[in-house]
Length: 527
Image (cartoon, rainbow, N blue to C red):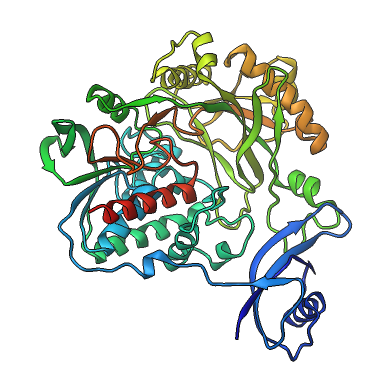
């Protein structure tokens, strides 16, 4: 029997299977006897009417009669299930074990290639121990932290699997995450997330899958240089346990992440073409989860058992033409220290799968161009954005009083430009906070744009810009550099394949993983 995909159907909260079946049949103009099977395809929340919050769902169904309000449906291809595993004479290094590196390595290894994943951070269990020790007041390990280690920066986040890209590889990434232990709800939710509590096991299972097909991992192993000859990258120099050694490969996939600043500098010295890439900086905003739930769902449905912690997405345009927007929203989560360099403070958000923490947070950031960075006094070259990020991170550390405490301020006081005497919402940042006027920490134009945007966002979510706290600084929204590559995904340094978010070609877990698959497929195609 052919499959059909229904158009979106309104479904009441708490509905059972029989109710859903009746709704499908009514929408599609068929009898219940004609509906042979159905399954949820996609589900979102419609909370525009706060007195009648509902789900909007589409379904894949099998029928004995052609339905209306539905289109023929074909199951998307899962590329990792159709990989031919015949041995191939290709010895590849994957530098970095984030989503881009892991999915590239998995595809290559499953295809019969010899793959070595080189990661400066630790394996997941040891990485968790080091990160938790830092969260609890311990020392920062500059090579293993929220940014570096198995799984990349996304491991200590909300684990959002949202992406605006359209690619045939997206379905493959979702299916592989589920095979690796992610909740099956990620396949059907309009706002899918794994949660940092689940991600560590999912990443460990991805690692084991790569090992199953012959892949090798070198943890706590830092790439310090690239071996080049006649415009080609032939290998890498790595440092492990205090010793350096040379390793030679046919192909080098560079999936180092957006915080590998020393790697960028090394590549630049080796003549790799790269350029400044616009990014965004700003602050983390926290409100209570109850406030956000009530603002988004209304008082009647704010605590409904079928609705998780509410999310939001806010976008605005500043008077100077720059964009200001919410980024990486973490419902029912915490603000965490995400620095990877000594004596610096960087903040990010993190949520567990159940999103049950007291507060909800997101970044409020402003876009930064090359011209902006130059006007702030950081030059106009490929690394001017990096220097600007480092400047803000060092200032945040100093403003917090040292020991990785973060500067913090009430939203209302930030708008007015004064320090806070006490905080409206208890900050969740684990290393402690200090009351600081954040307007003096940021360039005047960025602070002013955020203040004006908060006032505008208050019109969209009443109370958003007149309550809550801000913690600084959020600088690692995306890579500040782009490593150029051609149609074969190679840089001008041949045999070197820049991939993922760090190289400037992705923004988040899904798009990074997809980019890793695209590069792996291209490499095999051009063997």
